[in-house]
Image (cartoon, rainbow, N blue to C red; front, side, top):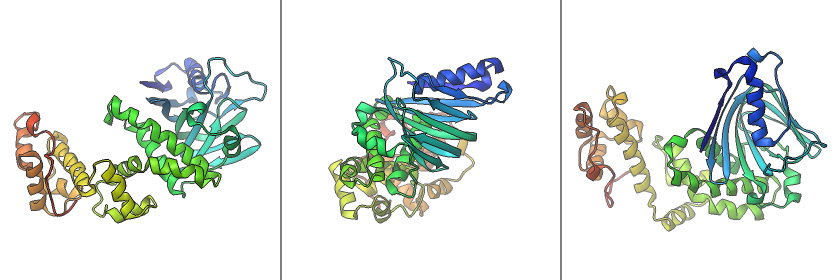
Length: 340
């Protein structure tokens, strides 16, 4: 399910109401302070459902959101934990007697059913992840200590969470419904880990981090797939595990790291070879772009995987065919190569 807001398509007189309606859908009926000139109002947002988790990409010039201490909570509003990933601009959050300022790369946690204030300076871009408080399952006393605290991206788990949230906000078209649902629990576990590590409670963070290691590794590989130095040592170091633990985690899921990385790279090469948008690029350039240093080696592993040469795929595309036939549309199992 996807919901979208773009006030640029609305008459200036309707923009304020649209922004308030969007804000209330997340927070209930809160105060929303806007620039006085309706012609200056800017807001666009796209929201995706990831199981019980909602992920929104937001850009706007709202001045302030505020839930006063005396403000009633709507009966139909679900208490949620909001995780705000700042991508551009500066925000200031207040809740529970604390105040913090966040900039690009920072996270902040807010509980939507309790009094809070969020002020934005200039045009702000962010990713907002919402999870029902009951689903997150953390004790209120723990959440009360972490809301409105700046959580910096220098912590590896914060960087992992930010990368996943940003990817989910923007690349929903790349996932089918079943794949999207698979990310719900990793999102919840990563939020638990971020909260727990912010509080110095590594005992609470360890299990969620271990449970989501496979998903985090796969996401990291997809983000860095084109880089030729994507080695097991680098991946393990990035996730603060040993190479042995990395291989063990992958083997439990039936994944051989080198084969899996090579398969992902071959899929990207196949996609570009079959696309008219890349017809001016040489086959060698496409192979090199996705981490294959040797053109002859690339041609061998490509033909072993798909049963047709890279040049054959390109010829089919130029001839007006759709690309690979169903029989050759995916890599063959059991192929081998001397590099990723």
